[in-house]
Image (cartoon, rainbow, N blue to C red; front, side, top):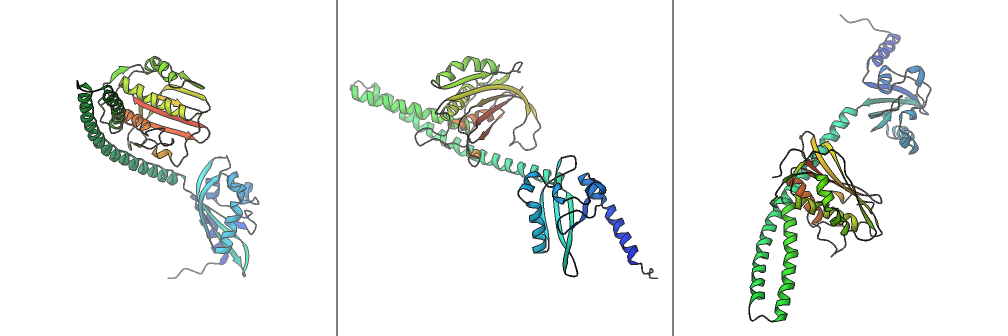
Length: 380
């Protein structure tokens, strides 16, 4: 049996009831100029305004001040009018000033061919947005980790081959230099070549460090004491208008670390900071304990680390090249001014010590490189 035909008034009442029941969606009408003409329970739940507070107000109050300044509310209405529908995602503002991520749909409403207003639907997608962002960050971190692992394996193989070649060259030069028939010029040339081999051996050690093939001799150390003992070395590396200051945090737990490799890593960072401040400045070496984890280690939980931060007031590094700074042979210096292995040595040392290194930089405001070493873990 068919149900009796319901009147238009009953249909309208049913629609009003339906709109009041949709608490997950803010569904409301705007007039042709963008002023709110109706309001549902979902709008109150999501945005915090009651109908009496918002009806008659312009819908631009839901937008961030930045978006209002850019004219985005008006652009949305114009796009809906011209294209028949407007869809977008963006940040919106609740009554209490907090922001949420919104999915927005605006449809024009016509009566007898005349635009009388707009139907607007807003959904809070903040949780989904943050979940997608976290997933994207995890994906990028995994790709970066795999890239650095692949580069490390390649670098390790090249470093071992290069080291074998240098060993052969050094042995041959020492034989030439030690021959009784060698004159003074021959000995001088051999000595110059041996010095070049020493430089090559240093580069090899840096490559091995990046590829995690450098043999470490970790000891349980007080990081503050290691830094204090090496401050004269760091200051001599910055003789001139660059000051080096130590800002240690008290009460740090000891960590397992190779003293010589740690000193070399900090010296590399100090030298990079010095070169970034040709007109002088200040380098601050600070320490602190942090509950943190390697951003590239997807799924790892936070644990206690002792972190050393080397901060400068230099030129800073452009955002587009920051992802490459720890790669071997990558450098922002002029040709002949750097091997591009300093930061890769820092990266490899931190990783082989069970920790990680990260860089934060802003153009014109300086750079901070942080080495984080886990507490209670011996280096490999």
